[in-house]
Image (cartoon, rainbow, N blue to C red):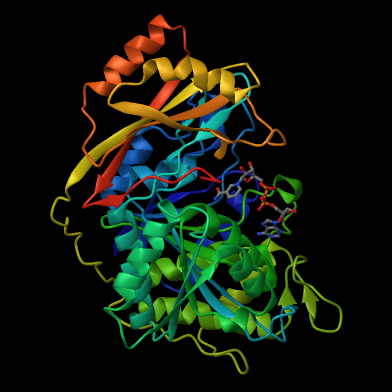
Length: 477
Ligand code: NAD
């Protein structure tokens, strides 16, 4: 008997969780559960994180968490509980299988069978945001080598275990050469360790367009956090309904399973929500805890129910569906089919020993890191970059003003008057010869800036690692 933690969630959460637990019980899943309350009720009681210590203790003790969707109140400084849980528990891999159930669920893509593997902790979801001037806010995009290695290895190990043929990488490294560039570089390095699995790479914009148009071209697709968030919802929706897809959030110690949709307050309490997304997440959970026999039984019964045209309103279609049912009746239909196997949809077949460990990260030898200068960000309300430059050259020392950009575009020297400028200027000071910059140059530059009444918002050091420039050029530089 495995003990898990269960949260009934908000909106349609209690209805779909009730249906899912009824099916798990009827299928004789060897589980028992602690119930915790997370989400709206806690937010409204003034707990801005949406989770309390008892709930954390239960999840950390049981290590497996089946969670119904929760409502995040809009505005008011509430942090997303989902993001908090994924990051706090180290749930680095978000696995979202999206498969069509043609001809029983209407879809334009009868052949699709794609697994999106989304990095779950990094990228813009580090949530580090600042307002820096009247006109400019920023969000830091953090991509790390350990994070990339872990998720890419996970994608290849997943493909190997589930006998998938290809792993595709989506990035935007034609623009973000350092952040997405690292993700792509790591992908290429790790793909070489799995020669038996085909690999390819797409720039995310055209890759996502092709995925939406011709999903059968893709098999396993791995990508950074934000792209994965968006692309996996699109992929689930085009498979038939957002109500069908479940997701696993996997870490080294804990795992959390949920539907990919939200709490659907518009249909809450009406007994019409489709419980399939959460049920399919529960099947992934059973697989994860080594109960493949129960996972197969439930998946087959669910497929029989879908094949027999017993559909909730979100997937009900005249001519295809036979019976429109509510949440409870759908669960009863799945229970009635336990022990049966589908005739047309593929039979469930789970690989045994599915829990695989991604090899531990090994830090590489330290690189030779050499300071070459500093980018000084300045809040300045003027319009003519030549005037700003005339002021800034007073800060020159061994590092000298070489460039000013505005929103990343070079505006000095030789800028264009057509370029639109805000009040946020990036002013680059670099060594002129190949020598390293002195560390003291930066604080002394900042001190002079203070005396000259230049409003410095922040600085970013410019480094070379093993002789390679490790910062971007200005656009037009
Ligand atoms: P949503 O996914 O809840 O609903 C979008 C649309 O899909 C609605 O029309 C809804 O009726 C329909 N829908 C969703 N699930 C369905 C199901 N199982 N059966 C039938 N129809 C279904 O998205 P939203 O309306 O943008 O968000 C509502 C709330 O959910 C927000 O507070 C949001 O923050 C939260 N949310 C939570 C999670 C989570 O807990 N994992 C994920 C996404 C959104």
